Length: 166
Image (cartoon, rainbow, N blue to C red):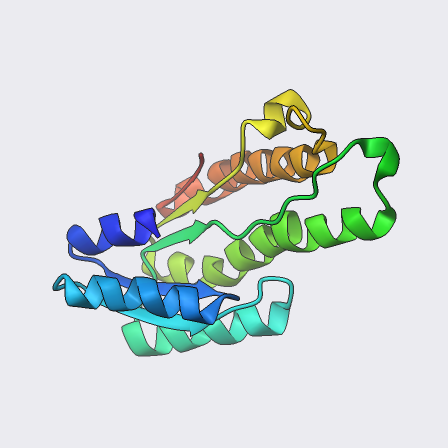
């Protein structure tokens, strides 16, 4: 929400895509109320077809995609000993595969433009192997986001596209 508001203040048309539709609508409405240009869309990053549809819809309507911020994420607290494979798969689906699929979907649009900015949100947990209450699985997914972003930065720089991770 903070990134969306900031981009709107800078004059960007902001598409807030989220699985939490009422939350996305609230942010878009706040942007519109303050004089910016905002729009909400439903997006479940665990579903590649939903990502492709969302990106195609945005690209068709806006004619370009200049900035992508991937901020979807879930967390599973607790020690690794109590975690299940289902926990790992749920975290991976949103925190890592969702980021990869979203970046992958916008790459053709940004490549045609010969410009774009990809900003992926990671976590300090990636460097710590989790947090104070466990979260090793979460840290692993966010470490993957860091590695993915470094690879994207090298591959996409010659095309005028930057990739950074926060």
